[in-house]
Amino acid sequence: MNVLAILREAVTITIFVFSMMVFVDWLNVRSRGGMTMALRGRRWREYVLSSFLGATPGCLGAFMNVSLYVHGLISFGALVGGMIATSGDESYVMLSLFPEKALILFGGLFLSGIIFGAISDWIARRLGMEPCEACRLQEVHPEELGGSQWETLRANLRRPSLLRLGFLSLMIALLMISSLGVVGPKSWNWMRVTLVVLLSLGTVLGFSSSEHYLRTHIVGHILRTHTLRVFLWTFGALLVLSFLPPQETVRAFIQGHIWLIFLFAGLLGIIPESGPHMIFVMMYASGLIPFSVLFVSSFVQDGHGMLPLLSVSVRDSLRVKAFNLAFGLAVGGVLYLFGV
Image (cartoon, rainbow, N blue to C red; front, side, top):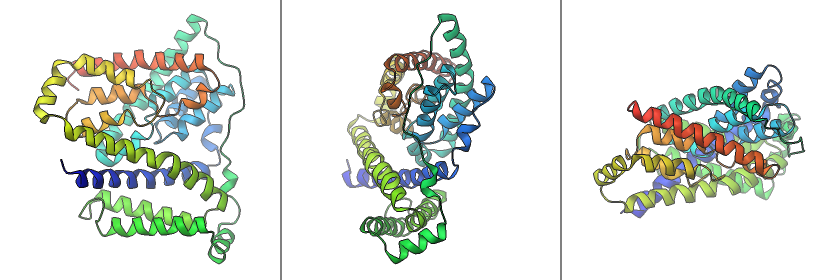
C-alpha cells in the first residue's frame, strides 16, 4: 500500500471537485433563478426541468427542487424524479475519474427521473397521498453577484480583505501545482487542461466577487462544508480499497453475491449524505462492480439534497426514498440481467 500515492490521488480529485463546485455555483447564481421560473407550466415540463436540475452536479439542483416542492410549484412526482437524477457530490468525482461513463450515467438518471416522476404521481394519486404544506426555505439570492463587476473588482484590488488574500493565495498555489503536474496528470491531457481552466476561472472569481459571496458561498459553503468532506471520504474509500484482497478475488465474490451488493447499494443510498456512496464510485473505477450497481447507488442516493425536506416533512422524505429505492432496485436488476 502506497499511502502517498493514495493521498496524491485523493488531493487531485478534491481539487478537481472544488474547482467544478465553484464554477457550478457561479453559474447557478448568475442565472438569477431563470431555471426555476421555467418550471411553471404543464406537468411534463415539471418532470423534465426538475430532473435537469437534479442532474446538474452537486446539491444546488436538489435544494432548488425541494424549495419548489414545498412552495407548491412542482408535484411530488417531479420531486421524486429530481432526486432520482441527483448524484450529490459524487457526480463531480465521477466526472474526474470516468467522464464518458459519468455522462452516460447522468443521461440515464435524467431520463429515469422523467419517467418515474410521472409514474410516482400516478401512484400517489391512486394512494391519495397529499403533498406537504408550503413553507419558507432559504433561497439563493442572485443579487449577491450583482452590481458593476468593474466597480467590485477595483474595490477588491484597492482594499482586499484578509479572507480574499488567503483565498487568492490558495487558488494561485493550486493553479501552479496543477500546471506543473505536482498534482493531477503528469502530461497535458484533457483533465489537466480542464483543471487549469477551472482553477483560472476560480481565481478570476476570487478577484471579482463580492465579499459576501466569497465569504458565504465559496469559503463558507463550498470550501468548509463540501471540500473537506469530499477529501476525507475519497481518501477513506481509496484506503479501504487498498486493503482489499486481489481484484480477481473481490470480483469473484461480488459476482457470487451480486444481489446482496445491489441491495446494499440501494440501502446505503437511503442515507441523506454525500460520502458513504463514494465506495461504489471507487469500486466501479477499479473495475470491481458492473455499471448496473453504480446506477442503483446513484439512482437511490441524492447526496444531502434531501436534508432540507427532512426539516420540513419526514413523511414526504421517507416516501421519496421508498419510491427511489423500489424503482432503483428494479431498474438496476433489469440492467444487470441485460449484462450492463
